[in-house]
Amino acid sequence: MNVTRGFHHSVGDYLRDLTRVEKRFWVLVVAVGLIAGLGAVGLLKVLRFTQELFWRSASEDFLSGVAAAPTWRRLLIPVLGGALVTLLSLLVGQPLRGHGTAGIIESIWVRSGRLPLPRALLRGFVSILAVAMGAPLGREGALLSTGAASGSSLARWLRLGPGQARLLVACGASAGMASAYNVPIGAALFGLEVLLGSFALELFGPIVVSCVVATLVSRLLIADHPSYVIPDYALLHPRELLLAVVLGAVLGVASAFYVRGVNVMSDLLDRAASWLAPFLPLLAMTFVGITAVWLPQLLGNGYDAVNSALLGRLPFALLLVLPLAKLALTSLCAGAGVPGGLFTPSLFYGALLGGSFGMMAERLLPGGAPSGAYALLGMGAVLAGTTHASVSAVLLIFEMTGDYPLVLPLMLSAVVAAAVSRRLEPESLYTSVLNRRNVRMPATIPHWLRQEGARALLKPVSQRVSPSAPFQEVVALLLEAPAGEDLYVTDEEGRYRGMLVLDALKGHVPDHALLQATIAEDVMDTQVQPITPELSLGEVASRFARTALERLPVVDGGRRLLGTISKRDVLSQGTF
Image 1 (spheres, helix red, strand yellow):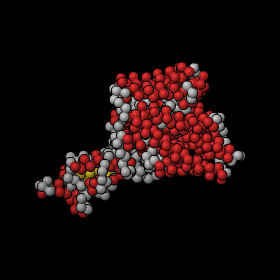
Image 2 (spheres, rainbow, N blue to C red):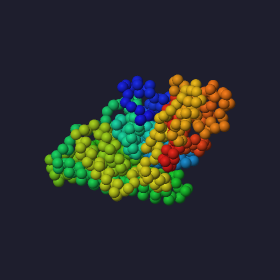
Image 3 (cartoon, rainbow, N blue to C red):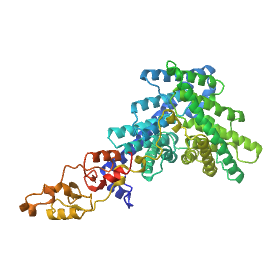
Image 4 (tube, one colour):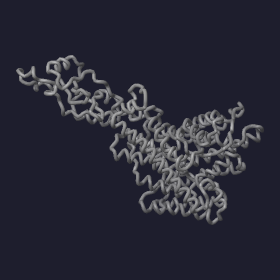
């Protein structure tokens, strides 16, 4: 992906201008989107089948099935889910804990895009089963981790450089989210803002393509509609915009509390005795089952309760009690080692707190917007506050609900919530998990993110000669060249044949009587291996460590000479 090239008149021109390696990468981007979309469809079908099997309800009406179930079923099924997680953890010899997104970020930033696919598939499958059986976590954890691991496996199988491997991991994770919630725009921005930490244009294209492909797959095989179908709310009165700002500040505090609650519970459970640790999922899900006897809305990812809050159908008491109970059970299960996502529970937490704020606003200031509108703002505010990513939060909520008139107050509440939450809790929901593992994120954007490997340092070749160039011409050009520059031999089609270094010619000049018949091909050095623009700067630096040359030639897949890279430019980049 060469960002230094000019504009193209058509897609065909652009594709023809790509190197073979670049074309292969774009094929992989599409493949990752396709795999993530198919994987998401498969996992969601497993979710629905399991819910129908245990709760005798379709996923769209999960809460009705749970509420209609007898007390013993509400208690027993979550316990069985915890027993399943415990049993599989013991069989594989390691816990299946974690909500996935933090692991994906760690893979991208620290591990050069390496994620084990078998563990991700097992963890995703177990996560879906646990959520279907009542775990108060999100289904998105399974979809993100399997999509990301698929991208990592493709990169490792085809031996891509670390930069492209990291980008494919982000593409897979974003595509998994896009297909899970039918949110291609929001998922793409989530991948850029949360996973990659950059809106660089060279990263934007692959992420968008993967999300579009995955969303098309899910729309064809599942459905094409917003995740939440609600009335067209609008908050345009100045008083309501002011309330949106106040709501953002309140939920910014609530977001910081959410992040700290998850971390405090994890810290407490990490201190459990080693013999007890494998059984923590079973104990946590037992607490879930006991609580569900009185509050069935807490089971699963909470879609139905959020939808009721968006429609203004939940009583005020539940709007206050359920978010705190959800936070407690979510933190307990996540800390105990039940795999699942924290994204959807944060939507539950924000929607119900926003709905309670809306009800209080209705009582204090009659005639305003209904509580459901504030529930929607609450979703965006808490999402922005917990992830510290207000841009993707706004787009995700907009796509999930399709309510455009609320975009302005949604933007206000999300920005305020993110600012307040960051002030109170500098780490996001995901980076705080990494800090607890003593994984430190780079203080600055790493070089693999700021530039595209060797291509970023590529300089054009000022002089090149044909293999038949006379020796006198070669010597004259080398003497006239600036210090440190060499001469490159290419054929009529621009393919690299060898290089000519002035110092290397000393002692290798043929018999003076044969100088008139000597050509560039006779004295060029063919032992120097050119590099490709997709190599990372670390790999280029290792090439320079094995040669005394100040510059190395750069070729594409067809060995066409693209330019050179200097040792000085590589070393000036610092760490790799």
